[in-house]
Length: 332
Ligand SMILES: Cc1cc2nc3c(=O)[nH]c(=O)nc-3n(C[C@H](O)[C@H](O)[C@H](O)COP(=O)(O)OP(=O)(O)OC[C@H]3O[C@@H](n4cnc5c(N)ncnc54)[C@H](O)[C@@H]3O)c2cc1C
Image (cartoon, protein in one colour):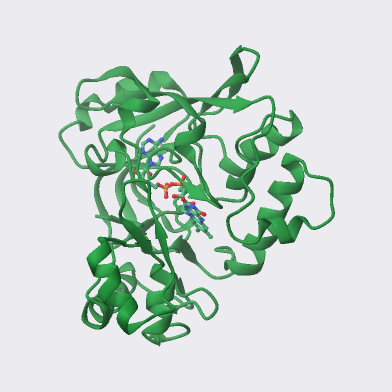
């Protein structure tokens, strides 16, 4: 049932102490009927809280998705179709797919958070994005108070983006997904140093996932030990002319050609070059090994992280003429 003035401190990976005016743990679909009174108030759909920054207390309702369940809904020669409820844990799903020898999620191992959040920013890692395994999304429309279905092509998936993030934040509660997983693996080993990490081991989806997990553990701070929300900024996309200007000044600047012809820069490299790696502002700072990750060293308000992020953004804009856009969602 709805609870009032609910603490969110344990429910976000930055461990920011903030309260929700109202809070509902969504465990069953019939609870969605309770939400009609809230449709004209601000609402926030919460999964594992690993991609949000609580900038202050939240007016309105936090809907904490805890819907559980998995079932096979179809199969053909090439694929199995697995329906997964949105409140399932992403990493547990990856392990479940490995145990069944279903391929497609191995490069996405160890991304924190819930299954329902995966389409929102089209999670991606090590050369693979969620959109590649997405078949169908089932969601509750808060505005129209009814269920609706989205095919993968309806979602406008892009780099860390989808309609759920940019067009309709808070409108659709994703309740379940149908994933399309391969019976035969189609390995993606060229990103990062997966190949080197696997070494002489026989190639399998488990070997890939384990390599990805080892690399991630060595690079990224564990939010349980040092609160953070992973990559704080998106890698910026620039036009070819802008890249040329930058390369004239910084010939070693990493850049990656995208399918749409734009070029992706490495936000972490820019932040590192600008001298922010390891810098602290009071209780918060830029991680000492991974410049793309902002961390909270001691008790701090969300506003302190907002201020740090703004200082980094201003400096990068001034030094490189590049705008960094947060990947993390600011609430409110
Ligand atoms: C250490 C670390 C490493 C990370 N590495 C990666 C990475 O490699 N790649 C990557 O893409 N991300 C990464 N992230 C970010 C994060 O793990 C993902 O964005 C993840 O999908 C967030 O899941 P969550 O359940 O915690 O979402 P939350 O933080 O709870 O929510 C994130 C957004 O999704 C919305 N949302 C959540 N659930 C639903 C739902 N059921 N219906 C509708 N909207 C919903 C929320 O409203 C919010 O806007 C990392 C984070 C951390 C802390």
